[in-house]
Image 1 (cartoon, rainbow, N blue to C red):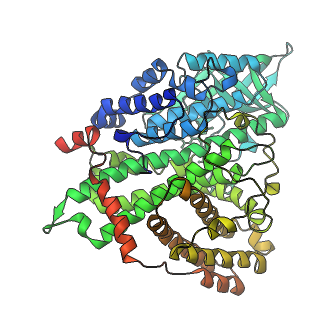
Image 2 (image 1 turned 120 degrees about the horizontal axis):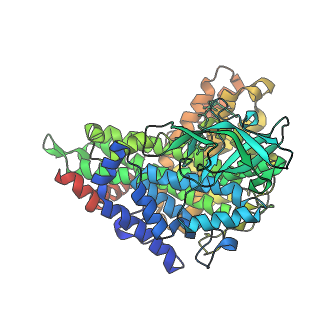
Image 3 (image 1 turned 45 degrees about the horizontal axis):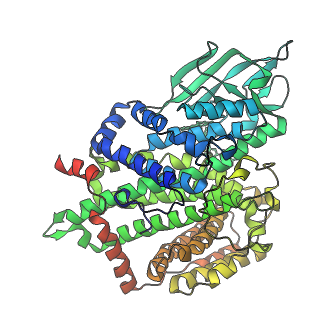
Length: 572
Ligand SMILES: Cc1cc2nc3c(=O)[nH]c(=O)nc-3n(C[C@H](O)[C@H](O)[C@H](O)COP(=O)(O)OP(=O)(O)OC[C@H]3O[C@@H](n4cnc5c(N)ncnc54)[C@H](O)[C@@H]3O)c2cc1C
């Protein structure tokens, strides 16, 4: 089974310690139990127990120290295992995932810098069990980081004084190294430096959110910064910010997958055991449809996200395809997660409000992920930059196998300039689709062919190219094509059955049609474009046998994950 089942943990690891980390983390949460997880969530209790566990087991030190700064071969930045660690944290609670995620972001500019002293210091702090923070956002500027106001004023002795505020900064309440982004005063030169919450000139203003996390506003008042506390300046600092987000945004997909997997187990368990009018809720045809849609969307999310990791691990200055795939994980997988929860909630209805359920938390937290690390729109605006090369200028790359080796992902901290996106080329998607011959994949191929003609023959004019609303609509279809391509690449690697794959493309065809209708309906679409849109609209191929097989697979999940956590809720 491709979905995580904590009670039968079976993921492949080439080494013992990686598997042990996953098992121990699962055991930590299983022992804590849903009841306590939920009580802590309601009371917004600081997760000291989790951080103690992480410290005692040296988990962040093992997973987040690059090999060069580690003490042994087990310490390495290995995306294969970080994927599942992300997923497990999402499965049990987004708050636990968030403290790990912002540590990753905080470490990004440190590992990317040339400041060896700060790197050694970070490795030491990781070993001691500390967390890290990433101070990029400011209250008044949001996505517009060009407008950053945090500033470093040079002093006569070559040191600096930092002044300014940061907003929405997770872990800043206790991270001894908060990577802080600013500018050298009186110039447009960017700079990344370290701030420590224990310094008297560091004011921890407040926790902005009402959650278990501490998402801080902090202000630096004439905070002294020595040259040795600076990680990068100028272009390097800018690149470090963007390159950190490039790799950090990938994790958001896993948080969604973890949340949805847990919510699915809970929802199917509830619905399959609930009897109304002398029948089970799962006997309703519309309920079966919603479950099959939720399940197939979740499997697709996981296939795509796993495959995107292969490209991230294989990336180099010559192969930067991950810069398209990671924003798609960010905006597509996380918004698919919202759809999965919507579908499941329509089935379990009132149950989703109960304080003892995981679902009640999932329904709230799933909304966060599309909004972090740049909004959905910011990411689609980024994605459309790749569209022309993707469709019209493919390049040849060697075939990429699954990247599950126990190696350090060196390139992630040497990504080079964050610019030049329009020059990145992709392997031809056609041969990937041609390897498959199922009814819905064949319909999907036709839809892609029409979209490509649309782009070539009715490409957006000057006004349309300036209209972000119109570009976003095009970006949704482009995203869907890339999404389909990568999940198909992974289908044989994960031995996905053809019926399940075709059922995935049942919703993909419907989504394609919906996006085509959206472009059709735009106020500025031309009659030629509208005509192409109509040719992209198709009904997916109906096959009741295929549906039945997949439905039985979903229904069989009803007691897969019920033991300790679920039992707690049931026994109430
Ligand atoms: C719980 C939480 C935790 C966070 N943790 C951190 C953290 O640890 N460190 C950190 O630095 N930040 C953090 N953030 C900040 C987060 O990354 C920003 O909220 C996010 O980048 C979006 O900024 P904004 O919400 O201010 O949206 P705004 O920048 O105000 O954008 C509003 C809207 O404008 C549009 N828009 C803006 N720019 C573009 C564009 N280029 N193209 C197209 N449309 C655009 C979009 O529609 C967008 O939705 C956190 C936020 C939250 C809520």
